[in-house]
Amino acid sequence: MHCKRLVAVGAFLASTASAQTLLETLQQQPDLSLFTTLVSALGNVTDLINRLTPEDLRTVLVPNNEAITSFMAKNNITSPAEIPSERLQPFLNYHVLTKNISKEDFEQPGGAIVETQLKAKEFALLKDEGGQVVFGHSKAAEDTEVAKADAAVEVKSGLGESVKIVKSNIQYDGGQLHVVDGLLTLPINCSRTISHLGAEKLVQYIRRVDLLDALDGTPGATCFAPSDSAIQAALPVLEGMTDAEIIDAIHFHILLDPYYTSDLRDGQTVETALKGRNVTVNIRDGKYFFNGVMASSTNDIVRNGVAYVLDGIMPYEFNGTVEAPTSTSTSTSTIPNATGAAGGRTNATVSTSAPSATDVQNGSTIIGVRSSVLFAGLVAVVMLL
Image (cartoon, rainbow, N blue to C red; front, side, top):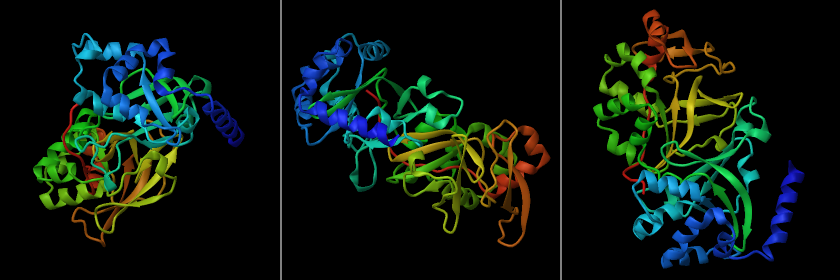
């Protein structure tokens, strides 16, 4: 792998000496003519692109003609000229990465998070006023059943949406570009994102304790969102919880920094927003577990950080035992009793997949749910092009 990276870097350095400007490079790609039209038609955007000097070595994700045509059809746009520049600017900024990133960089285990030029507050509420990010990864690096030769590199943006790199490492004098088969989706706030991804019931509990605005406005955070099926299975317990218990459970499902899978290691512990409580990360066959609960969706980019949708509700106590993901796998955790007292604790079996109605009737999931619930949020408003 190291040798491969050296060869790729060497090829890049050799090519930059004779590379053309971005516009010249785009004009030589027939399948990028619509994107070229967008860039050429807007003087201010062209100036932005021209400022990407060779020293910057930045990367541009360029939607091909098919992607732009599909987008225009879905939005009743007949010509690229109809898109106002103020709406086009954030979209273009999000497609410009602030580092020179090759396709091979995205293929590394855990993927790669890359900052973009998108810094408008309605789309990026991050610490140190940083630019919004994208997450690039290869299925082959995450799933042992996917052959590397057959795995496309995907780039994830807002609302859990991904595009695929269909042509890569095309050099220009300011870096390189990758052709993608779709447009990146501008990130929106966390509560709307997780609702879209199947955790709407959780948002209802966040509203109940009046934390929605606070959570959606916290810069740079991670939120864990139990799915609707997990919340539904836990209703017998949740309906009896006090607001104070729910607030603690929400805090337990928040990390105060953005943690993407590229930041996580097997066995790592991360401090939560609930004082004195940590979450343990485990990785099995490319799947991510948090206190024994599997994430069904990871690296979901939101306005002020990142969200994970979980198949269950994280218990406060966890003994670190996680089995490879199967439909019936379970792990044993030590969970606080119904009163949450530090002393009396009960051993219970916590499912690593979404709890079933039968589990709740048996009481095994109820104990775990009582101890910890819900998710956490972030972010604030936005809208796609």
